[in-house]
Length: 133
Image 1 (spheres, rainbow, N blue to C red):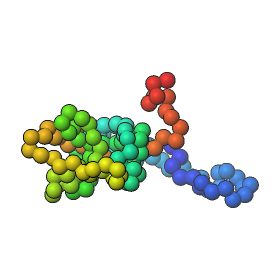
Image 2: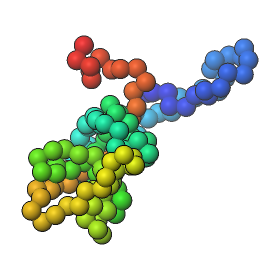
Image 3: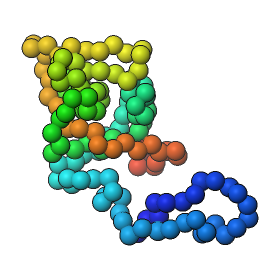
Image 4: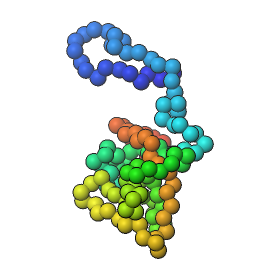
């Protein structure tokens, strides 16, 4: 069991448990819809900041989900893994940061969608697992 609801406001000296409840739910159940088709990666860079994905955020990527126009995807583009919005109608990879240009996916490009980003997680304190400590 994990606690997933707690009040963030500080209003007085009442019991810390007054506005706390614990739900019978695991993080796996909450975050992962298709366990056998899901992988986890880490964002790198600032190109997706306007939609709330920041450098070092954890990305939960589902390969089972059908890609739709303007989904956030992880793709292999010419040998590099990228996290971008996809414009399926215009064949564009879009950034969510004005400092980065759109990229047209051309016929000679090597391009495969690895999955759809269904969730992202921000660690407010670095995880020892991710930092290699």
